[in-house]
Length: 431
Image (tube, rainbow, N blue to C red; front, side, top):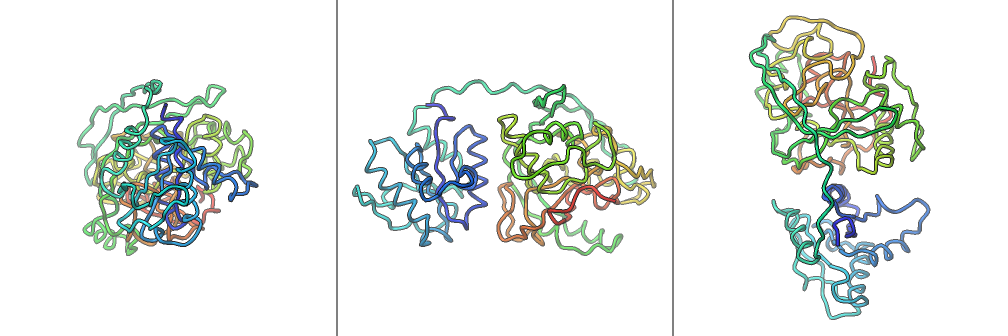
C-alpha cells in the first residue's frame, strides 16, 4: 500500500479544529490522504450520513483528544463509538484505530457494542510530545507494508547574493548563497517559483531592548510583538517573489470556488509588478484555485512561517541587518530607522525581485507590498502556537495580519517582526 492510498479519518471536537487543521496539512504534505469534515465534506451533503461512510472507507481512525474534548458529550463521542463498532464489523487489520492526545488528558471510557474492547485498551499516541508526528508515522509504517513512493519532483538550485549592512546602512558583507526550488507551470509561459524553506527553530517577536528603542524613537508602545517566544517550524515551501499580476490573472481567470476574483485589481499596472488591492478572502480564493489547477496544496503562510522565512536565520530588525535603505527595498525611504541617510520614496510598487533577497532566497519580504497571513487577530503572543501553525482559535475571525510593509509605509513597518492588522475585507495595498 502507498501512503497516498492510506485514508486517515481525523475525529475531533470543534475546540480542537485549529490543531487538527495543522495536522491535516502535515499529513497531506507527508503524502497521506487525511479526511477532515471541514476539508472534505461537500456543501449539500448530509454530514450524519457521510461521516460514517468516510470512517468505513478509512484505513486509519485517528481520535484526536484534548482536555477540552476528551469527555465532551457530542458528535465526537458518536464518531468514536462508530469507529469502535466498525472494528467489530470488519476483518482484523482492516481499520487501524489510534487514540491520539493533542495534550495531556484522560482517555474517554468508551466500550464497543460489537467487540469486548475499551478505548482505553488501545495504546495511545501523545502527539504533543516533541517526536509526536514521527511516532505517528512509525505506527503507520508498523501497521501497513508501505510500497516505495514514486520519486518526488527533483528540485532545482539557484544561486544568489545576500547583503548585510550596519546601522548607518553601509554594506559590511556580501555572501553567495544557494537554495532549492521548483517551478509551477501556470500556462502561457507563466510560472510560479516555490522555494524550499528548511525547518528550524527561531525566536518570534521583538526583544525588550528593541521595543525600548522603538518607543524612544517612534513613540511605539504596542505589545503586539510580545512576548518573544521560541517556535519550531517544519519545512515548507514559499513563493520566491510576491504573486505577480501575470500570475494572478492566470489563476483568477479560472472557475470560481467560493468568490469571484477580478483579473486585474491592481492600481499600478504591469505583469511583473506584485498584485495589490487584494483582500484576505481573495488571497485565500487564489490559493484554493491554484491548488485545484495544479493538484498541489497551496495556502497562506502562518504568521510564524512568514516571520521565520523573512528572518532566514537573522535576529536583527531586518534581514539586511540593523537597518534598511532605499537601495535595498521599496518603502518610504524619506523616513529613517537607524543612522542611515534618507533615501528615495518611489510612491509606487516595483517589479518583483529587483532588490537583494534574504538568506533563503526570498525577495521583497521587506516593503513593496503587504503579504497576508492565515492567522486570526490576537493582541499579543500570549498562548500562541509553538509549532509554526496558524493561530486560529480564540481570535478575531474578521481580522488577519498582513506582514512585511509596503511601498508607502515607513521602515519601522517593514521589520521582520512587525505585525499589522486589517479587516479581512480590506484590500492590500492602499495609499
